[in-house]
Length: 204
Image (tube, rainbow, N blue to C red; front, side, top):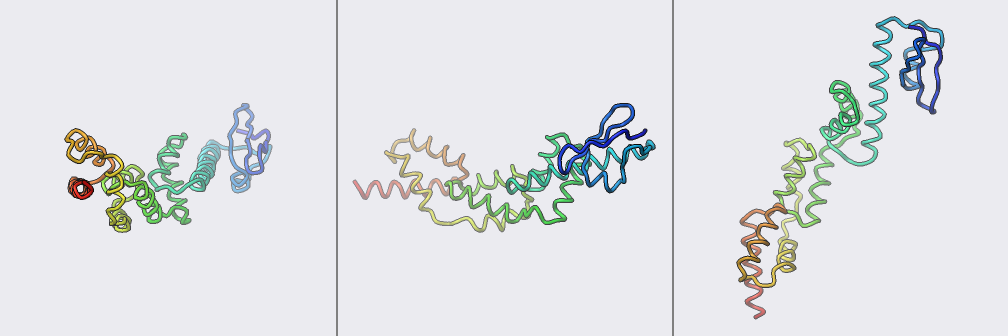
């Protein structure tokens, strides 16, 4: 297959136009690496290499764009690349390429997730759910969770803001269910309710 022209569409992107009028979108780096030029004849093997290397180069660009936008886990990046059309092999390759360059720090990401959800008043159970949902490796959870504040005042404020009558069974049941969804354990909820009742009795 003969290359009829190379169209540079952006500073980094090139479209390879072939004699059958088909096109392959690629990068300037790939054109240089494969020594492509108008008039060159490409064998079937050459075409396979062009398509494969172009796909990898474009997916690398997308991976770099994604990790520059926000922190994420390797698993999240893989899923995002797959969602954007990369096949499994290409997505795996790009994630490994990103990891080798230190552009994903899953330990730091885990710590950021813990800080974020703890600051919003969520309990450890909910934070664990978020770590799982975001694809953080399980062996990083314990160290990250060890940074959660042990101060009970945040939970007490949540209870105080929502519970007007600590003796009301329906209100207590609804609040307990809400706090459970926020990731607090049954023991934490029970102790917070006891503190709320004690405070309420004292004020009375």
